Length: 164
Length: 329
Image 1: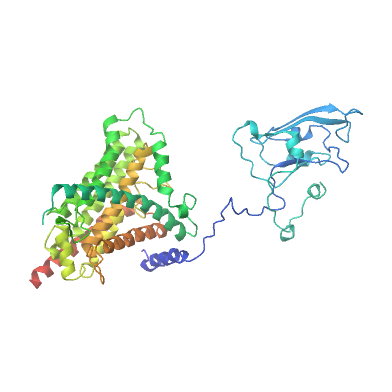
Image 2: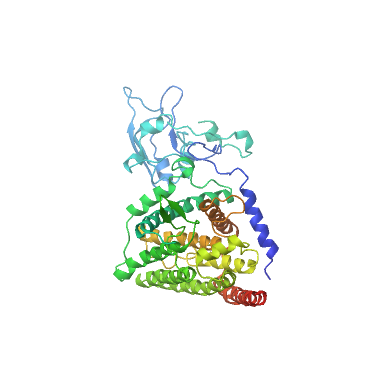
């Protein structure tokens, strides 16, 4: 049998919500801090002396399940020394429209040259603009995303994030 | 009192536009209020408080491609939404919203068309409006549309019976089918909600079912089925079906206000149309509140409730009212 009183209770529950402040987070104005381990836009890193960490070994491209990384390596010469190793990445491109942000590339990298940052606002108006070149990945990201306090979360931060 | 035909024409034009504007802002109110009832904001980007949202929606719907199934039967497919809107709008013509005024020597009625059988006209137009759903679903030449239109018609036809029977008590007490006369009678005596409370409850439930609103929104059932009779409609043709649905809600709310809450008569100040508007607003708000609170019925529950609960209650109410009216006389 239906319970008439319970049906009325439901109306009271919805009516009470009218006097509460909505819990909606107004996104473009308010950006919720991401978790410290959040995987977003990639970054390429340099050593302190300015040389690139990437040696163009293509292990990241091999590890990538979405096949979105393209690396073309070239030899370092004494006149043109780009990376710390023997070779460097002449072309390093990531197709962001294919990337699934799994983080296998940063796990595969032997020199911690590529890591996943915290930025997630990656919309563009054309597919061509979704291909990120080496210069874009080496430069500090334009948009900054607030990151939650790492002390609030007890999951350890992986060493390759701490030391990169 | 009669009024010149051109005043009636101007009045009709004004009322049609007012009802369309009321419809547009009913959608805004619904989304806004539904949002707050569910602890969220609702539309708040288009203009202040999202007030331009209905206009943005209109532009979007008009510019959208009106998809046309290649198998559809052309003329009825296009006519069905127009028919639905026409009957919904026309029904509002007999609703009295004021006492009538004399402006610079001319008499202006408080109703667009003072029909002696206004109540019957409203139900007749409502029944014709069901054709919009039947024809729209059938002319789409899609099995989902056809099944949806059958489901819709079964619901609308069975709740129309209870709806018509529930107002019989009011007709017996008001001793007229003219809505202005019923309103005047309530102004002289009491609001018919008091003696006709059972009739009002049946009417209100029937009204929610007639306008296909939750918990009786089986015709649409957006969370579990493909839309129903308007599956194959898109763009403004779909928009017209939605328009008809909302205007039906406004018209039937106005009818409830007229029959049970003394129309434009207020408890204190003689505000006229403003009282009518306030009561109408409250009715629409309660319909939205119900939508936020109650889950949808199953189809068998819907039919069982309509025929086995609502119809007997409405019949007994009409019989008892008839006996009491005869006995008091």
